[in-house]
Image (cartoon, rainbow, N blue to C red; front, side, top):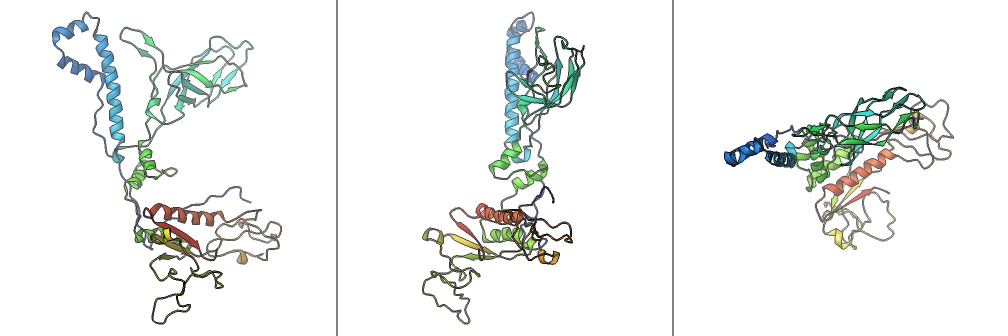
Length: 410
C-alpha cells in the first residue's frame, strides 16, 4: 500500500468552460525612495551650521562625535522609512529572506577528558540584547587540544531585516564593541554533553534579511503564497482584481472546480422557476411554460433529485442563491465494506478514479495500484473538491447574500 497521498484542492481550469483567464506575473517595480547615510546627514550639518561653530568641534574637538552619533541615528531612521515606504506598495514589495553570516565558536580550555567533541549543525545561537536566534549550518570539530575559534555559517531562524546584526564595531575613539550574537541557546554536540562551556562570538555582520512585505499584502487580501511560488507570480495574483460578486463570476468558479471532473451543476436563484415559490402551486408541469413543480411540501415522497422540497427562511430568501451538484463517482476512495461484490478492476473503476478494495476480500489477481480499504476510510479527494467549492462560493459571493450548496440526493 502507498504510505502517503496528496490532493489538489482546486483543479486548474479547463481549456474551455468560461474560465476567468490565467493570472499573469507582475515584475518588481524598483523603489526610488532614497535612504540617507550617516555621511549624507553630516554633509547636511556642514551646510546648515556656520563654519566658526562646526570646525572647532571637528578639530581639535571634542564635540563632533555628538553630531556623528546623531547622524547614525538619522541614517537608521531614514533606512526604516525607506523600507516602510517601498514595502507599502505591492509592486515594490518583495518576499522575505533570512539573514545569513558567520559566527565563531571557541572555548577557554581543552576538554579535561581529552575527547573529540563535535558541535553539530543546528546548534542555536542568539543575540542576548535583541533575542534574535540563528542556527549553525555546519559541524564544528574540537579535537582534544583545540580551543578555536572556528568560523561556522549561520542562518536566521526567521525572515526579517532586524536579523541583519552588526559584528564587531570599532568606535571613532578606537573602542572595539563586540558583535551582537553572543549566546548559545541550544548546544547540539556529539557525544552528548561533550563540552558544555563552548562559547560564541560574532566578528562579522549578518546580512541579507528582508521583511516579507509582499506576503503581508497577500494576507491582507486573503491570498496566500503557494509552495514554491516566486515573487513575480505571487505579485501577479495579488494585483489581479478578484473575479467575484457577479453571477458570471459564480459560474466561472463552478466551472473551474467541476468541469475538470466532467461534472455539471445547476445554479438557482430564488426568483427563478427552479426554486419552489409557493405552497399551492400546481403539482404538474404546465405545457408551454418553464414552470417546474418544485413546490415545497412536508414528507415529499418524490426523489430528492432534482432540487426540490427545500425552503429558505425569510432572511435568506431575499438574498440567496443555491448551487446543486451531482454525487459523482469516487476519485481516490479509501473506504471498505464487508463482502464487497466489486472484485475486478472494471467493477472498481470509473472515468474519474477508482474505489478501494476491501482489504479482507482483495483477490490475488487484482492489478497493483488500486487502493486497499481502511476502517473509516473515505474519498478525501472528492470531499476536498466539495469543500473547495463551498469555500469558494462563500469567498466570492456578495456581502449579505447567502450561498447554499446542495449535493443532489444527500
